[in-house]
Length: 192
Image (cartoon, rainbow, N blue to C red; front, side, top):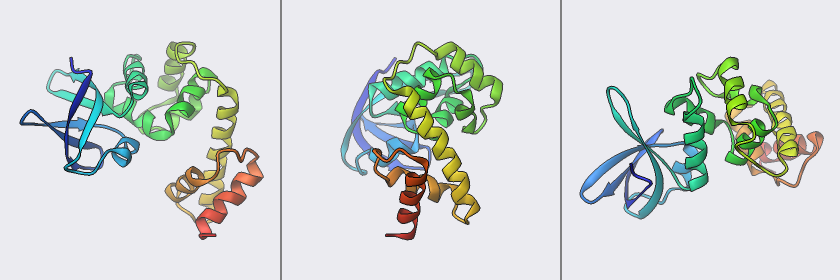
């Protein structure tokens, strides 16, 4: 129904924001990455949206790019994945990495999302594999799998998984080897 909405950003909460459009305050559900990159309250923004009609509610889901919207709608079209589960999957990692996981047939990476079990993840891979193309997906999946191991290793050293993921997001993407990524993440965590 609404492909894009443009207006003034209102409040930002943990899983949604409001957008003032033509005198209406639209509640738009989204992912933390979008909230982080959305302009501050009082500034104009344009978002790509999906309008979802449920038996008991009308909900709007919003993203900063058409690619994010397309991925959300593709996930939402998979049997057993509703809009909330689609958002949970999108919270797991960056868009290109999630597309790579699906392209390479790695459902176990999708099971990291809250509420997404093995069968649902396998169904998503089966239904979407080949529909979502990404160059270099094999290499990205290798890095993602290594990063999951790094997060677990750093958690065993006493860091939270959130701290570990945050540190990994700050290291140079050109660093590929497992050992170098661990060293770089530890430097970030120690503030060096």
